[in-house]
Length: 553
Picture 1 (cartoon, rainbow, N blue to C red):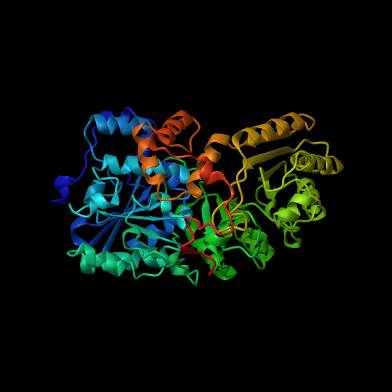
Picture 2: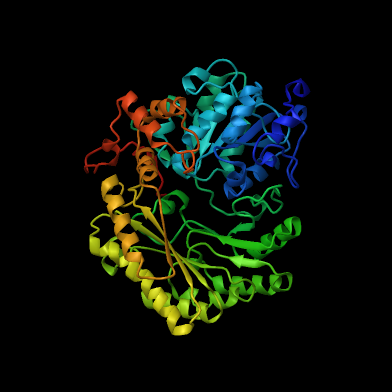
């Protein structure tokens, strides 16, 4: 029966779309099991392009863990780009998995991972192309797959609560196997199955939730070496991040008031240096990639970070493999990093000061010392580093125009440090995002600045930046930031908004070339929803849509 259901794509169809390798599968290290010899069939669905999803570490970990179970088959599917969506609709072809080319409708469980709110409409595209109803209530009968959602966005699951059957709040390594086991045991009785799944820690099932009860985030207490994929799939086309990624620490010891990631990924758990080195070595043997990224929310806070980099430098210097780090805090432990890493690859340094003045840094509890930053930069510039990337926010609570101008002054001080060391220019790139008062943060009840105010501050920064020759500013789009805020702070009413916008043509809202704010304005109007109520300040006594989710544990 599985061979009868398998999708066969016409060759001319693939030749008619951009990057057909997104849809062919058969990559090195992918796992294709016999469809008829497993008990549970699970498809990891990433609501964005293939090359974005193939850079997602969470997808790689879950793919590895699920396929490690002999009785589970786990495959992948991604949102097709606009041209491929049209092509498979025109040819009446259902959306399919990459490994066995099976229609998503044939799987037992579809697991969606949401790391960005503006990918919500892409889930609807994938469901529609699979012939699966959007609303959870419409899937109770008919043998449809269970629709599961996880990822950082679902710490406020309410906007998707009418569309998703089961949410996994927190770490997913253990719950995905537990859910699969219960599905296997109770598949003949869906109602009983759902009740049993609801007992799993970290699981939220909107249809069974009792008002006033709490859902506690699931935490994987130990970062096990065996749970980490050292044989990741090697794509035929270059993903966004084409490198070996090893998670050295989960969680963050800092307490920046704006940061949701600390709540989502905490508490702090460390992977010891020996394990990290072993994982990097094994991953290199299995991929041959020429860059290693040491992933964490605050790499400089990892105990012995310099020793780790020194050890990896010794291992990979003869092979010409680069070591990269995510954005760094300005701490003593960063002082030796540029000289260590530059022995292999002079890539750019990335820092996230977030605010430009000491007053605002204190207000957001971002405790950095500029002199330590300058010490790091002097060392880096002397070693030949020529690129610095900075992350800032505008629209922070209590921010003044002087604080906004301080962002340019901050960037200018870096150029001054460069002139102390070298006459060679350094590219300084400042990414300016709009502050969003996210759920489960110190600022969760604050209002978000309006579109006009954010645009005014962007214009102010652009004008002031002209005085620094090698400074480049990158701004987040104001309209997409406002929409992100609506969904991150939203309630159950937004499910019908998502459906309405999708029906009007909303696709790939995170992409500037496809995002259409007019579609969303029409959807808000049609649904009678005032976006302003999601952006406004929340009183201390007001019950927030995400109040039933407990993440600080």
